[in-house]
Amino acid sequence: MKKTETVPERYLPIFCQELHQLYRAGISPADGIALIREDEDDPQVARWLDELTEHMNEGLGFAQAMRASDVFPRYMTDMISLAENTGRLEETLVALERHYVRKLRMEADIRSAVTVPAVLLLVMIAVVVLLVTQVLPVFDRVFSQLGVKMGPVAAGMMNAGAALAKAGTVIAAVLVVIVIIALIIRLVPKFRASFSKWFTFNFGGRGIMGQMAVSRFASSMAMAASSGMNMEEAVEMSAGLCGGAREIDEKTALCREKIEAGESPADALSQSGLFSGRDCSLLKLAERTGSLPETLEKLASRQEEESLRHIDRVVGTVEPAIVVITSVLAGVILLSVMLPMMGLLSGVG
Image: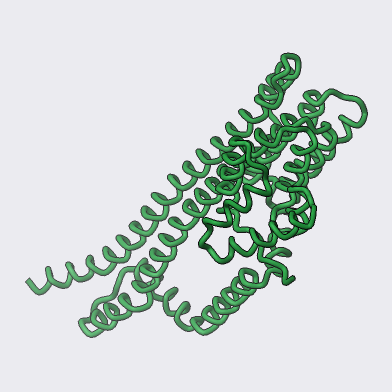
């Protein structure tokens, strides 16, 4: 059978919710998939549901059928496999739904936070370029005919605009190359994966991206711990989910080494450097009281909220800064034009 496309991430929380409702009603996964398929109108979703049903009809278990269909994330299939072995499928489906809802929300917030300032910056740059390359030369020619010179600031900007106009072909060529490279990365899965891996490795462990990686790690650890997974396996699986960044990989590897050496999970997490001092104290207390999964989930939510607040602060600073800088440049250009004009009119009067 031709390989089905990967399940869109936007459908994963819905799928987990549907399975949870059916499982809670006492319906087996095989019968539940058949019920979901009956009401499914999306051809793409119907294809992978049919493939999943086919594997289950061949005698495979639910998690095995998901692996065989090769359209679900590895993390999801591993967690469902563990849940089937430990009898905690209902709780795991709820945790997976919450995990993917959080992931989609964070991705949407990041896209929104990046898109608005980027569009605003491009518009402002276009306005300034238009002023220095098209408007100022017109005024310069008019003033020259009247025997008046523009101010040094306007003249400097006009000269910069002239140089920019001369280099227009080169700049356009560079922009075209950048756009082509971006399209190749976006449209070719192999290049997109390579670029994503390179970018994550070099920048994924810093700042906001580092906070989000720690949030994913904590959420994954909470889910694994609540499902009864061995802590060494839980760290390894969680590291695979949030890994790829050099700094994060080093910290998760240290955590795994500490657990393998006999350290308690809370001590290993504390010594890894993934969490702050106060969070480390909270983890140690949670381990003593038997509430480590719940505490890890709360830490994941807190890290996520801090990441979103950080994004909001950055956007709240960048947008006004772009507007102020562009407004000042436009004001300087207009004043440099208007002052000689006002002097000329005064002389005529």
